[in-house]
Image (cartoon, rainbow, N blue to C red):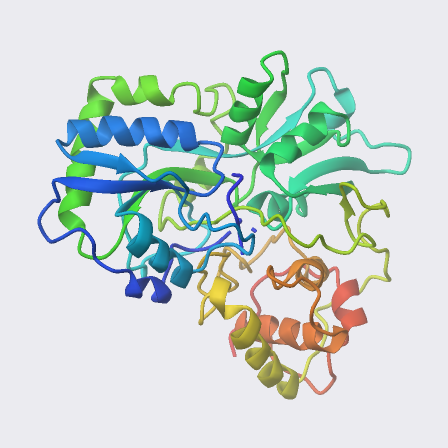
Length: 424
């Protein structure tokens, strides 16, 4: 999605901060509502069309905001507090709110409708590009994969093997990277592919589902506390539109093609529980070019090559305590006070550190964090501070303290999968 994350990288429904959302809709269903869409979303045309049909069917008059929610000109993402202000100022209901199961959103104070579009992140390549479609590497052993910076697509991209990365600042540019030959493959939100092809009807891509916990999404209507009756009416209208075929007609061109929308039955079943949400890629300072190839910056061939370790690196208690303070100051706004996820992914539990078979390594997480976080000021911390923050993340995910301090080099070089450690 060309909406912003502070947009993967990812992520629970807005939690504690959203409790401050003002209640514009009374306990009774309002006779009219103000509708917003997410900022810069490639599905905004669809979201408005579905909202008009749903609210008309529900017998509710609607006015549409001229700008997306929190579309105030900055690019630092949208926090729970900013969302609260935007709901107070601009609208009563958000059309096209993305929800995922990356983290449990059960504590959210927002209310959500049934989903009206099930979509997700996909892998695209030019038709007939054998190397891109089969992961046949270039002479240096890698293929170039485009992703949208600080969005779920970047989180999915780092799970890919034998890859260098072309980070783009919007999902449109991520699709364009494949179309223009800057990358062999791209991981991107599928509606961005639809929007790109509408603007470039002669352009075609081979499309495949991106197999990842971060890939599966639904678009819904979201509103503040006290809007139960409004959401009940919206759900009723969605059911009517679904039963008479009008919803399918509206969403047909935006839905994942049936030929690629299968995926793993087990994975897909797990992804429809406990929906949550991401916002997608900020378009401000780019990460260091010595780690990622960023469009318009010198390429350096992907991750820095470092000596590998085979066991989880050690860290001490003082680092955990300091890392907790750093997290509260710089990370909790987006990832939640208890790491439960907010406008960015959860950093605790099986979505982040599964019990086994994680595709993410401790070194990979450290590289991503030290290069891209915090989203409003990437790289602002010292190496020692990022190491302390990593120690805190390891501790909260079950790893125990030791007598040796964690260094940036040790964290960066760790190839140990980020599986949940034994609980302390």
